[in-house]
Image (cartoon, rainbow, N blue to C red; front, side, top):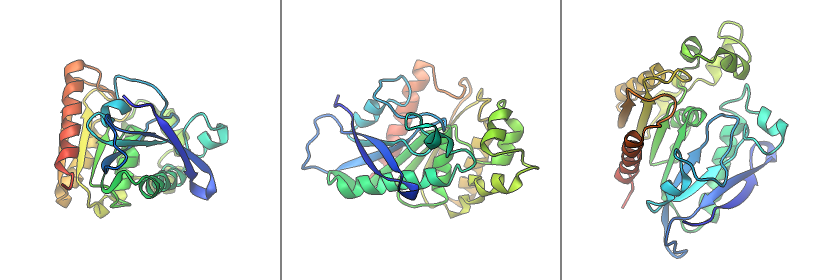
Length: 260
């Protein structure tokens, strides 16, 4: 395993945004490697130098990928203002922060193969994957795990109402404009990128109906898509055999869309 490194670039409004970069095993700086771009959940959270059962950066790198994991607006550890600036602005400054980090990495690290980049995320990270699907064609393929797709129906089904009301600054009837502005389902018709959708039946934080709406939309739009459904998992894939299937499916999805 390689040690993590970091880089900092300018995000929205010129604000510094730090990202983790992890090189694959047996790294050769003279070679070109595909990149996996990871987006964390929360959105009040962050990528750290850790080793975890789920969303393990070393596991992504192990298949021969350079991993870039940014900490955009909403991330913790960079001051309260930086964390708070995600609320009410889910697809705004954070999206700019992420895309700037992507563009910086591709431009400045010659060992990254710009023709072979992939993005994956869960929870808020899944939301951002769904947002990316309707706003950019930078990636070969996407992985959306437990992501918010329709803000209004999410409000009506989640067990965490206070969170949605805080993040969207009210209810769908008191602040409809914000729910509409930042709901990925309103932009999915722009999607051109293949997507793997993953969800658990016992996810009450971001209920399974979000994935059903997303997958149905992708299928009706004729976008290459696949649905990995766990009838015995929650917001997280926690059972060892399910985790094994999760990793294998994600690896296969990336490998299928690498341009040789």
